[in-house]
Amino acid sequence: MAKLILSSYPAERSERGSLQVSIMLSGNGAPVPSRTVEIKRAADAAAAFDAYCADVTATGKGAAVSMRIGKGDRSPPGFKKLKGAANFHAVNV
Figure 1 (spheres, rainbow, N blue to C red):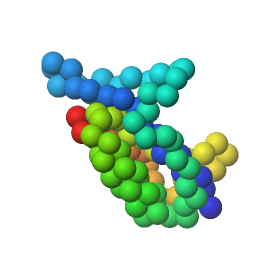
Figure 2 (cartoon, rainbow, N blue to C red):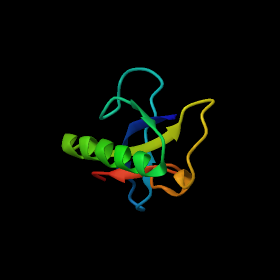
Figure 3 (cartoon, helix red, strand yellow):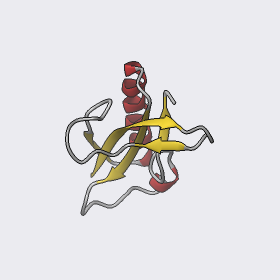
Figure 4 (cartoon, rainbow, N blue to C red):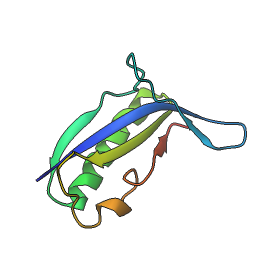
């Protein structure tokens, strides 16, 4: 089993349409706190990511959501092709 770490960051669209993500090193600017989930398959990661995105959507705040595998764990086959694994996924933006 691998640890999946789900994170969200405040975000907004620029005038040109690009996603601007605000990663804060101090304080708690995250729309939803980070969450860690144990997964076996890429499908488990996709389901956990969708549930986390639903929680972020419920806040109504603009956010960029991402997921990664914990240090020392191997990602399951197909994980790197999932939304949120390779780059940020925009929510409410």
